[in-house]
Length: 312
Image 1 (cartoon, rainbow, N blue to C red):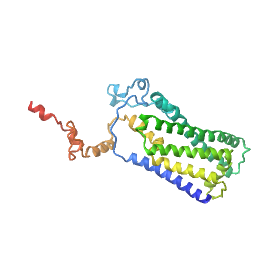
Image 2: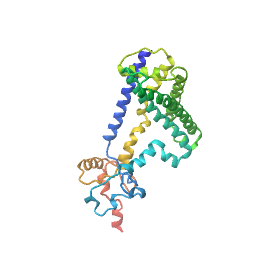
Image 3: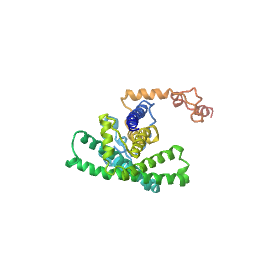
Image 4: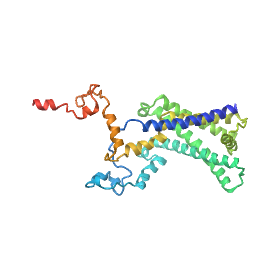
């Protein structure tokens, strides 16, 4: 059983990496999106970002070098990533559950990283008495349980909201409920393993060390093996679902919401626009008059009311 767990863990890691790359490549190779033209744009320098201004306010902006502010961008990104600022502002009741859930997931990532550091030290023969490794173990012992408890508690709260909130329930699919239950069960098993089997995560470090060293060291604790299987299967599952937003949001913000690069001397963009302009249009609304045969280029250069105006 323990050897099979190692095989499943390796397979899950491969699935995770491949799925993430597939999502990213799929986005990059998709047709060019329509510009949202939403302001403020976070990377706008100076005071313009505060009121929604842009470089387009400058006289002859096309002849001037463009500037951007990483500081302004971080001022928007950090509160949103760490504290879910938009949820706090626009859906406060949901924030009380989704914030601990996401904070628990952040802690889980840190926890896995700390396990990796401790495992590498173990493989290198560095004992837990070393000052740095002792500190790593101490932080691991705090972050691990915090991750399990916060994620489970937040997941239970979100599950409750999706069941009881009529408005939210209308937008909840089977996948939403399954995902939350998966996280809750995984964290519940992790809490039980921590309490009764592996209180200082020495077993977890040894397992990760065996993974790194490609050694199928036998594990005799069934509950621990169940925990590992749940964790690695969850990791593999995440990028296959809408939960892939944890990394795809980068493109949503930087390429779609904040994409304001002018289309001047950009042959690649011109080529991408040329591709989508040749797509057929089936939208038959009067102001579009698409019949499935006309292309967007034809629709864009055709005035459906010109004939009526001429007759008048």
